[in-house]
Image (cartoon, rainbow, N blue to C red):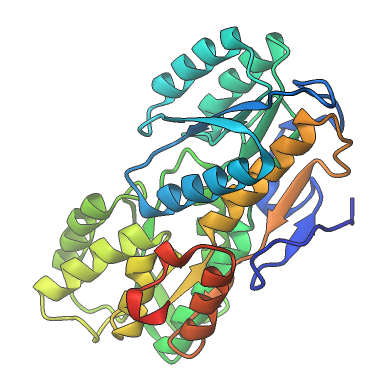
Length: 338
């Protein structure tokens, strides 16, 4: 379980093992098996993605489609629009068609269990990514280390505000292991700074407009803050909009997560202090490669792969942007950094 595979993204490190912190759940994985016999002339996969109303998941889809084309896989992408019932309906329809493999991005960790078990019952192999299903049998899982993401964000925020002050945490979708683990990591690490106080915390569901409303309300109750941790960059952008409306741009430090193009541009402009960048494009590439292994009947040596992001600030922004371009992901890089 300690074997690693190289990820195309140079800034990321892969840590293997079901015991990895970001992948702790009761979901199990089988090491072999296939939805297509080796040498089969047609390779098909259905990819159900949680949403395409977020640049991170659009990038993930782009990476998956690019890799599917390279691997010779016919990939059918379906958008669950952040709806548990929609995702389950897609699975119900898909397993009847018997794709070679089902690639699943859970809308929520709990609800995904029913989807995985339904595919299991139809003998359709499942590869999951980004958010870990709570149960069911997977061929493989790949996702970023969300606990470490929260810890990096806490340290970055502390550094920016000189280890003291009042801060706010804007959380993601609480039903996902990603939101829970980013929260856990952030709170564990920020507790190491005795002069930093978390004065408010509220979920904004990984959504920019919701984060704008949440942050606007928080600022009314807590006008004297020095920093904000937003658990993804879409919410960080909403936070920045709320700060701008109160003439607090540049006066309150903001740290996000994901490394989407708009956040990289905000770091370049000095509005966002840092982001724990996690290349969605690279994650999409990797999950399709794992699906291809399943389609070819290859033995998958590890059940779970945990990808490590990298903290991006203005100091290393250009080099990170060049790394994205090198793996074919220029679309997620601000134009003047391509």
